[in-house]
Length: 223
Image (cartoon, rainbow, N blue to C red; front, side, top):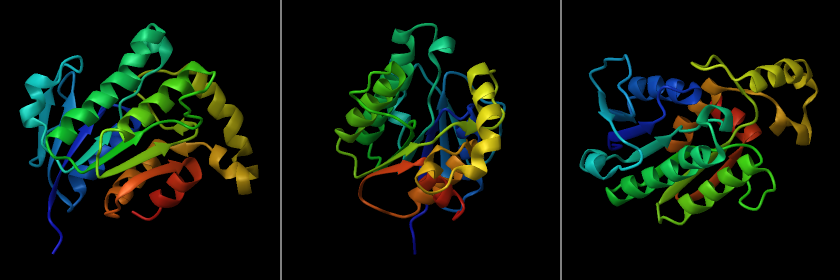
């Protein structure tokens, strides 16, 4: 009989994180779901425990951040963050520290949303930060790391991202033409990414797995 596990999620107020949180609460795989964030979410569920944390210093909350599987959906934009330095803090430092703290508390799986084009040596700052985050998470000695690199994300967000809205209007009509090697560039729903994360977590694999957008789409249909 499979052990019932505890999940921890960061970024539960975001597009992918919101869907992921709902799926975790519905899943029989998890008896407890810990949501960590800067503020409480307007959500009550018998399986849900909410931790309000300061991502700049996770040490005070660390004793309560004990979970088997960690789902990291943290992410922002340079425009929303206000500067490249602030963006780096959210999309790199906070993610890596979350992985470090939860690994030290016994987490065995870390599943994180990155981005298509992530590359630690990229010329584009956004892609470089995502690539460095992936690189640093992999060096923490976690038993299993799943990295998800979605293409343009579709779905309703709390905040407006005009660039993504424009891109989606351009790319959606072209989606049916994106076949073969172009499949990984197709826009993908945030809910599909969340479904893929839960499916990957259930595979009980060991090692590092990087999922491009077309692979995310395939995994998301298997949940």
